[in-house]
Length: 448
Ligand code: NDP
Ligand code: 2IT
Image (cartoon, rainbow, N blue to C red; front, side):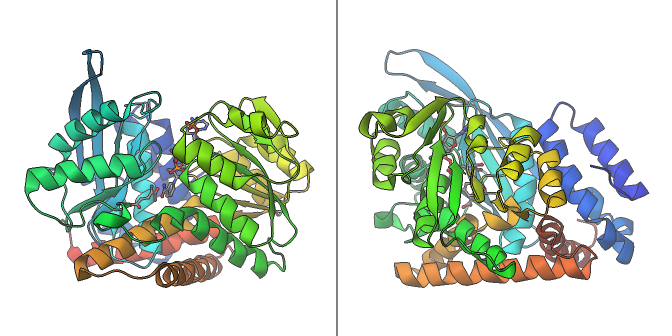
């Protein structure tokens, strides 16, 4: 992807030189800078006043040792990270990812994307992200608790309800948030909304669990309707079987689609009768099993090892909800050849840049992650509001806010795309609309 502006192009070269061996971070920055070319050409002060240079440099990176002891008495040492990327429009906000693939470049790419996503929600939240190379898979509850307590024993120094509010991401769900919150509360001796995605008995928001997947479908519904299409009667392929995938499946079915695939890092299932979601919830949310166990209960469904094969299954709507770069050019070609008419990113950066180009060139409707999966963090911000008020809203109230936020977000991304010369390009529109609010605020602050 080329950046057709001399200054931004040289800035990109500097990002690569100063952040070596971080390809995911480079990929995320390149995509945003390429779409901001018309903005800096209309508003050269964003370059002159140093906003673009500051935008690509995290305000702060915290990196720490996380020692913990397993049930056999062996000591393990993991790495913990928190990237506090940009606080121009609010406290740093973004999830924590626990996965063996985590290193600084992954957290930087996620933290960078979070700046624009959070701005797009229209709520006052800055961009941050954190995590660890700890793998919760195969660990006992006690081991996960010990790890989370050790992680928070360092992290608590740097976060707070008005400073930085972490939440979940891959490998961090309700169980982990409980252990992390318990340790924060103990260390600080205060009860505040310092984390979101909390349990409902201790300050969590109704509908936060469902929010990312539901929001993805609300956004996709707007995009489909804008093109005279809908979920009704469509076949959908979903990858992943975690928090985002499960609730995307639930809402897609409620909106009239038939979901025929789900996956995990081992492989994918194809159920031509439509996925049995209560079974997936039991396998994944309760029993923490592999998705291959689905065919023990449904022998008429198919299990295929390897996750990329999921995109070979014919579908009208594809919702990648697992991880970054899970859908490449070959997969995009297969989807296009099989008649796919819409792709909406539930995961962060799941489509490779050449896959996105292929979709757009083929006229496939494309909803970028920063816009399409913003419902999760938006609802986290609603959790923060409820915590500050010492009050709670009903499921319907939160869900209504979420639907309105996703609808407004779709309108804002569409109109920014049109205003800056790429009508229909929601990826460009989301980057531009997300940037403008942050960029204007940074201009207002001067050089800080
Ligand atoms: P979960 O941990 O609940 O689920 C992740 C799912 O993706 C699992 O099915 C997992 O399979 C699969 N997966 C993870 N890594 C890989 C990999 N390297 N290759 C193939 N499959 C993989 O995470 P979430 O559902 O919360 O997150 C999914 C995506 O959505 C991530 O990109 C996350 O950043 C993004 N997201 C999450 C939000 C949230 O609110 N939770 C909000 C916005 C975006 P396995 O179990 O085998 O590892
Ligand atoms: O990528 C994301 O937006 C998230 N993992 C959710 C972050 C949050 O603070 O709710």
